[in-house]
Length: 162
Ligand SMILES: [Zn+2]
Image (cartoon, rainbow, N blue to C red; front, side):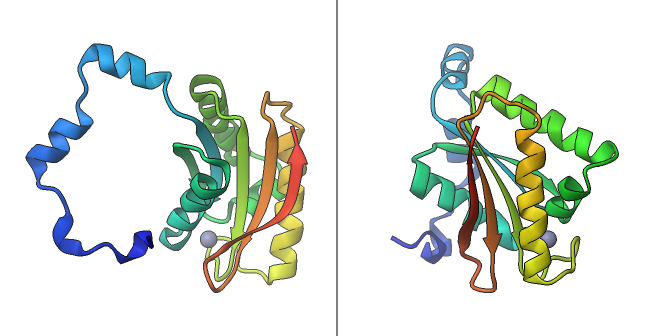
């Protein structure tokens, strides 16, 4: 089933949302240790959130995707300096250490307002970003670099162990 095609009339009303998302303290503790997490370092752009979440869920059977977003994160990580990199790293560390994420995906995308360069430059930035993330020596199984083109589909351009 295509997730994008859900009829709008089926949005639950507030009382059912409240019941579904407010677990008791015991359940809350249990849920913190349930489910498999992955980490995405993605653009703030609203067009690239669901493609990345859905790709990770469909291809790696993860339950949840922690999103670390910046405008043009591939440029920030490729340039590799400043507080923006430290901020990304701090958020990734929470996802890895507190949620046990073992997969990180960094993406560049078509028509990026935060990094308005051609695809070839994005691909270079994404590869440099993967090298940067690996230099953090995180306890993860894999780091992916991805490109999201004008069809808004995730294409893996770099896959690295650990
Ligand atoms: Zn962007």
